[in-house]
Length: 511
Image 1 (cartoon, rainbow, N blue to C red):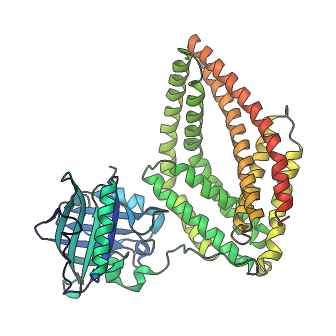
Image 2 (image 1 turned 90 degrees about the horizontal axis):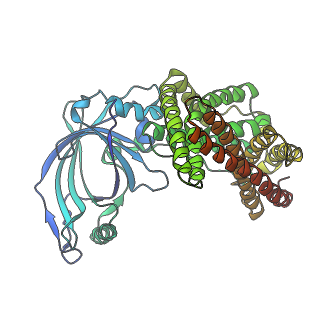
Image 3 (image 1 turned 90 degrees about the vertical axis):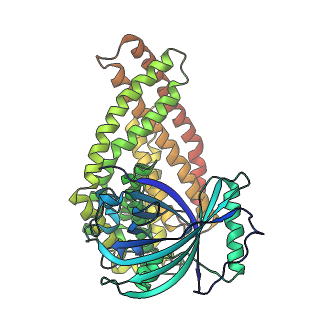
C-alpha cells in the first residue's frame, strides 16, 4: 500500500452572490495575475449518514485542474477551521465508488465498518488569480468558483458562487500578510466568510450535524455527575480516534497519543466505576489494555532510544559512538517488527469492534442511577479514593527499595492525576489546578525513574549479547552506570517533590 502525498492547507472561504464584482485589489497588492479559467468535476464520498462530513472530513475524487485525483482533507487539531491536512492519491488509484486503499485505511477509525459511496457531485468553473510577492514568487492563490450541484442523473439541483484564498507558501510571513489584506478587502466588498466546504454546503444540515462522538460541555459543580462522565468519556474517545488516524498516517508522536488517550480512558473507567455498570466498564478496560499492549513496544522503544542516545552522548569517544550504534541497531530492528504487528492490530476486526464499542460508550455510557446526583456530591469522593491509593503506595517507598514498588506508585500517580484532570473542568479553581500540576510533576518524575530502570535492563542485556564485542560492551557498561545514577537521583528528586504534592492535595478542596 503506497502512502498518499500530503500538504498543509491554510485557506479562507467566502460566499458571494452571482453578481458580485471583485474589488480593485491593485491598491492592496500590485502583483496579481488572472489565470485561465477551467472546469472541474468532484464526486464526494461518504457513508449514508455522512459520517465523514460530520467529523469535518471530506473525501472526493476530482477530475480537472492541475491537482486532479483523490483528495482526503482532515482537520488539524488545535489549528481551527481554516487549516487542514490534504492527502492526495492518483486519479487512477480508484474509480468512482472505489476509494483507494491507502485513503480508506486512514479513515477507518472514523467510518468503522460502514460502507462508503458517492453522496454528491459538484461541477465547478474556476478562475484562479495568483498573488506574487516583491520577489515575484507566488504567495497566495485566489479562486472564483461557480459551483453546480448535480444529482445522480446529472440534473442541476443548485448553483452557488464561492471565493477562496489559499496560501501557496505556508512559511512566508509575506504570504500570510497578503492573505489577511485580501480577506479584509473582500469582506469590505460584501463577501461573507465561511468555513464549510462546498460539498457540505450542498448537502445541507445533515453534513454539519454533530459527529458520531460529539463534543459535550462539562456541567457545573451543581450539575449531574452523569453529564460529567459523558463529556469526559466522549472527549477521550475523540482523542483516541484522531490519534488512531494519525498513527495510520505515520505522524510523529501518534503512537504515544493513542496510548495516552487509551490510558486516560482506562483510568476514568476505573475511577468512575462506582457510577458505571461494572462488567461493561471492565470489558472496555480489557480491550483498551489490549490496544495499549499492541502499541507499547513501538512507543517504549522510541522513548528508550531517545533516552539512551542522549545519555550515550555524555560518554567520551569512541565509547559514545559505539554505544549509540549498538542501541540504534537493536532498537530499530525491534521497532520495525513492532510496527508491523501494531498496524496489523489496528486493521483487525477486534480493533474495529473496539472503536465501535467506544463510540457507543461515548454516546450511551452505561451509567448507574447514583450518577444522577450533583457533581459536588459524588465526584470528590472518587478523586479522594484515587488519591488515597497513591498516598498509601508512596508511604511504602524507600530510597533503597525495590523498583517494582516505585513502578506501582507511578501507576497510582497516573490514576490520581487523570482523576483530578477529569473533574478539573467541573471544579476549575486555582487549588485544583495546582494539584493537577503537582500530580503531573510527580508522574513525570516516577516515569523518568521507571525509564531509567528499563534502560538498565536493556543495556545489560545488550552488553551480554554474544554478538557484542568487548569495546562495545565496555561502552555499554559506562552507560549502565549513568542510568543507575539517574534512577537514584530520580528517587531523591521525588522525595523532595512529594511533600509539595501532599500540601496541594490538602488545599485542593477535593479530599
